[in-house]
Image (cartoon, rainbow, N blue to C red; front, top):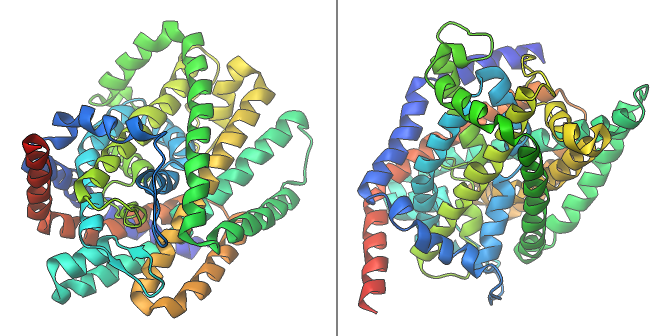
Length: 467
């Protein structure tokens, strides 16, 4: 484990260095400029045609899911532990200023996610089972051309492996962590955590298998119910805490904006900490909303929507809901509770949910806070596991054909059990590394196909005007 950790640390330092941040943010800025800030210009239109149609029943043929189900599946993949434990990590290790860079990453990431989803629908194809399949590997192959298929294969290798980390082990580990926190809040002397982890691992394996082997239709049906419910429960709980600590909000926002540019705004005041703040903000922003990673387009490609731009609008909403709303609430909740003296952020704990539970517990009691976090995290993480099982499967199918689907799914289920008992900090680090690696071929494709995104966007809105 120590050898793996040291190798991963070296790769991670390279992958998440300044060049990657420039590629991620620069790619988003390029797409924003080329599409004339579509995420800002058409924000109202995007909300009206996404969240505004949440209660509209859609029809989807065999092998398809409705546009809302596609968005719910993608949002299920993005709204996970990164929205709770990941934000706590960013704030404790990078300071309050990381929230500012989280917002910047999200605003730019809206254009990136919009472009990814648009291209996924534009260049998707049907597999042997009659299901729509798409994503970076398909818009690389069908958009950039067959000579670039190798780049799509590289994306698939990293994404299929990343599914074991970001979409599996990290999520499972945080579920077990939060459940054990609840148990300890009721019984501080409890010593059976390892047994609890094993039981939870088995339960998650069974639940995931039931949904996973039911196909894309069952996955869409589950996520469209699970995602809105879990989001509402968590949002309401955080809003109540923010109202309770409302008097501290001005001071918190002041620390966010000053901490974004000032080393003094960082926990511990480390040398060169402005870069640390930006790095943690961007890393957690990407980990949270996955804009630029190329994961969510694989879910959106299964939509029954035929207009790439209309489905692309769900990408804008997705980043807004995931990062601007849910991540901000997580960050503001722990910062306000800390400002009010209810908890101490100077502990540098990575991937912890204890601080989130403590922040909520300062209003809902310690046990109540632990339960809210455990339930919220379990739902967030489980939905992420389901979505990333689909992503990994699609990548494996692209690489090895349909015969490889079942073996990959079985390995994925085994990793769930392993993730329930492995060291969580290592899982976070490996997930970070793989995120960066899978983003590289996807961002190259997005830049190369940015002209297609511009043409499709102009076509859609010119047709809308002429109607």
